[in-house]
Image 1 (cartoon, one colour):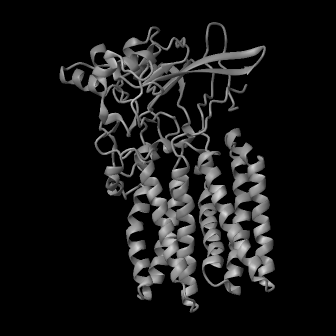
Image 2 (cartoon, rainbow over the protein chains, first blue to last red; image 1 turned 45 degrees about the vertical axis):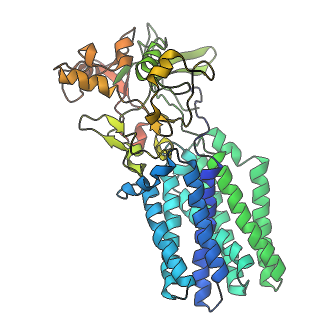
Image 3 (cartoon, rainbow over the protein chains, first blue to last red; image 1 turned 90 degrees about the vertical axis):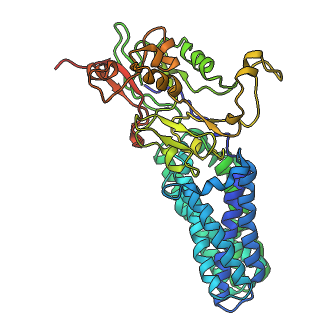
Length: 279
Length: 213
């Protein structure tokens, strides 16, 4: 027999928390791609600084969300196991390396790229460790968040930097890989019997519209490869914006709890205990 | 903590006792009793399931807490230091048992004005931070200091267990084979919630007597 569904949508992390994953993903992606572009000889000052600003904006949004903002430094107390602490600890050297690079310290680019990747990985692991929320704790959330950040950063770089062919290819590959991993993630959630409220989001018009825009982004990026720079730029914008939409839904709408599950009913009187399946 | 599902009648006395004892605001229930329906007409069962913080062996809330506000005592009780907590709510996202709450603003049971009791018991330390069941650690510690045994002596036992009208909720030291709950577990079949998560919850649900040897 099946039991009543008691899963509900979490209400503690709102758009401010989603904003950290959105701005942090695009920001670190931009810093990473800027470092690659610097290695190819491009002027990357604007995308690099904007990437750092986005990371800072994301952290500021979290600061606005926490209940005791004047104790924010306590976030650094638990690097042994907390991915939130680790994310915070990487932020300062990321800003330092990025600003040093912007001021002409060339090795700063490579250091900032590594730290940006680490920061994004921490964000992915933060979600993975959220065991109350099956949509976040699924193992495939880690590659999905990493590829979403890369797709956003590579897409945004086409607008903020020089949309040369290698970077259009990078944006297209990242956007395509994100789409494949997103589908594997959806199937993984379904196989793991994630809450119906979470699975329903993949069928909703908002998510369908986002998927259409993601495919449109890939088509526009492909057109960019045959010489249409404007289409590559628009494709890049769409690749970034669709990532924002996905993360906003993931954090604020599709985040259902596991709910309460009993595997057995108790014996009462002459009645016998029965096995219970989740709803 | 042991909850005998055969005995629980869903009267919610434990939830009221918890609220009275801990002065939790509206919307915050450290001890909850779910009313679960299983099956389809005409084969339906109704089960009352007390829940709350499971004081896990390996608490996921403790692992994610960035401020070390969440701690675990030697006796297994999971605690929150309200002076360290930054109210990020990450532990709420990590707890598979939905046992944690965060309240940012003062809330009262009857609108904007606090009752005299609410005014008397308001604790500003608990605003903007995460709270949860403490197994009435203050009562347990006060009892231990007097040489009492939690679970056996009511003055050293959590309020929900003290108040339970049917004896469904029991409390004690699992490590002590002579304790009441150790014997209950030996004599009955039980499950723990979300066992597959590997958290080692300290909340045991009895559902039938142990099969004869």
